[in-house]
Image (cartoon, rainbow, N blue to C red; front, top):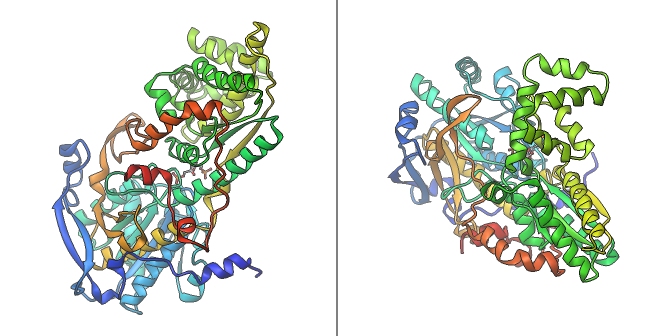
Length: 552
Ligand code: FBP
């Protein structure tokens, strides 16, 4: 098989571990900290997790390894969307496991949770694992979005573990997957099955974090990749001076990705969904805000610019979320079939007119035809509109175009507006992990094994102090229940990990808000260039603006 020169070189890269995990397994001891509490709803979470709630935080340190020597058979799964560095979590886990005892075994269950349910696995060995070191992607064992949440599923997993002799499972996933890890850990503990469950924080969206988990892996590489592309487009825009580029970036719900890209590239516009929700901004207000910047730049003779749009924005616009809710109601059950059977868009529009309230119909009528139709096209398995498929970059550019035409007719604007559209998402999820993600992920995996070796259950592998060089990182573990609260999901109260949205009083947003008016009008683009893997540390090892500002 032909491989690229970079891939060949990356195989030889040695990920950096925190100093406390260096110098051999026999030198790693554990220090227990304070007992923990969940972020909210303490009594309810405690009642739901009687065996795993309130456990102590732990930190590894240098000292005699006092863990019990026994053969470990560990199963690992990758869960959810790809994020750069997933392979290194598995490599770190594998290396720690084999360094502790060459007889230890690592089972990679394929395609995510389904692999655990179907007993579909590969036993990971040197030759195979070495082909994935420091590379992007999840193809080492594949990933999936199935959920592990019913007792029947837990029993199936327990039976598979028993059959294979697996005594610990590592779940590499986002907030939902780690919520499932917590529930599974509690279940196994309640049944005394002797199977530990450890989670690792993954997602490019960056919304699995709190005071303990400083960032989820993959966010660094994905945002560097998108920022490189945005910077390249900005330079093209500044060279040709004839296009406005509307760029949507991934992030299903939170706007961390968009905000980080804005901090890196200084575009003219970056929408932040959380701010839109907080200020209850209407579609017309958002359109005006963008059109004001276009008009102000046009007055300076600059008929070009960059607008960054977070993927999840439409759900945060109050009138849009009401509209989506009404459409979901309108198409509930068999009514979707009735709607789809109507032969023409005119017929469908009649049904829409009857099904929506007056205000939602006004909002709907304001939307361009392609967006109107997208709202009715793709439904998720629960029958809901898949908001991530709505081309919000096209939505805003066409609303801005109409707004500017009106201004022109009123003699208030005399520029040219020509828009191009982009969506950056999948381009960044499987990039070669940056040195930061390569190191962070390897450390998370290595650390996850130390948690297993020391007998912990229901913990998240935690590596912190990440704004400092890797040597100063702190490795340990945090009970997953510490991140949980009760939320309403599908009409029921459920214990879940609290999703971390952009905090409007946090330093990253405050920095952005303090500078955006200038960036909106003056051309202030920054061109970050491609991720560098080799060269000076200040170019290769720096992490995100978000983390640097959060740690200020
Ligand atoms: P995770 O939350 O599983 O990490 O996935 C995040 C994400 O990359 C989002 O940014 C995006 O909206 C979504 O996955 C796309 O999902 P899919 O891969 O199923 O198309």
